[in-house]
Amino acid sequence: MSDIAGTTTELDVRLEKHRVELTGYCYRMLGSAFEAEDAVQDTMVRAWRSFDKFEGRSSLRSWLYRIATNVCLDMLNAGNKRARPMDLTAAAPLAQAALTPRPDNVWLEPMPDARVLPTVHDPAEAAVARESVRLAFVAALQNLPAKQRAVLILREVLAWKASEVAELLDTSVASVNSALQRARATLAEAPAGKSADGGELDEEHQALLERYVAAFEGYDMKALTALLAEDAIMTMPPFDLWLTGTPDITGFMTTIGASCADSRLVPVEANGSPAFAHYKPDPDNGGFTPWAVQVLEISEGRITGLHCFLDTARYFPLFGLAPHLDDKPA
Image (tube, rainbow, N blue to C red; front, top):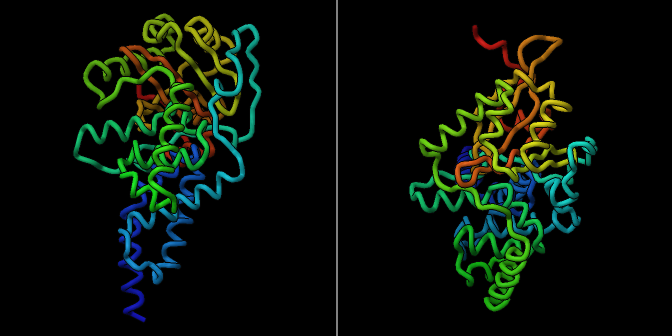
């Protein structure tokens, strides 16, 4: 029994080394943090149960990706496609703003960086990885048929060779190249929006985020307007409402969203982008209560997207965030 236990422990360690990159792959495929983690867990269980059949003709990593791809394709057969509010409806002017929720399984979900971005030492490779989990890019992937999605991710994000992808998908190199060409064409027709400023946060970006926190926590709409691009977008899943332009965004915040005044923002890392946990004042218990995970998009020194995910019962535990904050220190 001790030999079996030792073998099991060794296998578990070998499998766990691949969990983060597999979660990133499944997240890009599925657009859901929770479905991605379920898919990876299913992959690990299948690998563990069938390891005695693994003949080593490919690497363990390739074998795990084959299993994960099959798991994702099975999940995508249900036909669900994750989306952002602007993928579903037209922008609403502030005068017509209505908070209409849709089910959880409609929405593209935020994902903590630590769960999907393995540690890499090459800055260029790290930048590509961050770009590939940004909300706009993952949303664009949802427009692709499932197998094209897998091909694009494996070839262009993970830099697999066409022959390796063909082997994984049990198809030909010509079929892989054709699928990649079609996937590129589809993404070109439905671009992912403005390209975000890439790379690690430099001093200029950090200063912008510090000004944003000061403006938001102070609910200073003049200061916030100075930080937003004129055509900035604000979304609030699970509501399908989305707003564009600084007058409507700040107007919403001072009317329907007025209860968010005097909030606190706690930095988090999500989708390769600047992000914050938003706690708003808790009038019943004092301190601050969870309200949203905010993911920001920045381009050319301005905030172009403010995406507020309001399902705190699901997202705050996902990010390991406190369920309550005490009052600000005097």
